Length: 265
Image (cartoon, helix red, strand yellow):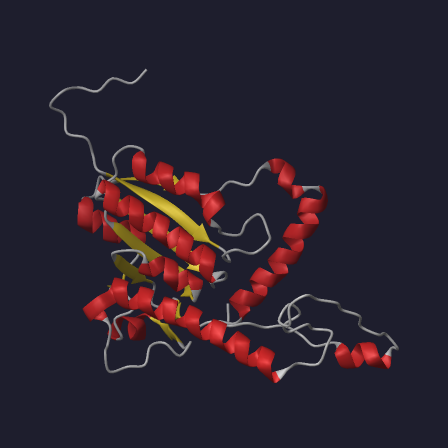
């Protein structure tokens, strides 16, 4: 049983939420709003933290899951009046930067990779291979756009145009989010939304982050040497390492490694 003495000032605490991995992929280690919701809620509400720190290491992923996670963090910050400070490790790119931009401040290591404010869609075409092997593709739909970008059929110009409109609209949502969160900090003379990435020093010059710093020393500088850190993150159950889950996670792991490899990591 714990007792608290009156008139004794408690040491401040900071809740640290770890956001590591690709966003919205199939593997159990993937970041998504449903899995993270109880973690985020607990971090904000337990122990009255003076701030919530986001420990981010993500190459991106689903724009919808990025938006949902970021919006949940913003709602709790405003409701409970708790500031959010993000610290980037290896990378906060694409959806990873979306999460970072949900914070009131963004700090990174000198060699952190940041940015990639863009949208990508990739796939494959196998219609030539199937034809050579003697396969005939049979697809029946109700609705002329139902089989858009079928990888087993030749690519259609109208399908590509339709996809590009979707990507453009998602990109505009991303741009609006960054501008709303970073505001006047952004370098208005630079084109920041081409999908390019930068290391921390250049990202700071462009206004994408607030500077170079690491989590513990920065927060001790802000809240005192005796500040306490309470860490929160998604824990994998032991049974998820076996059977079909293991195979699923192996495939998702390859996809995640490919996402990190885009940034030389």
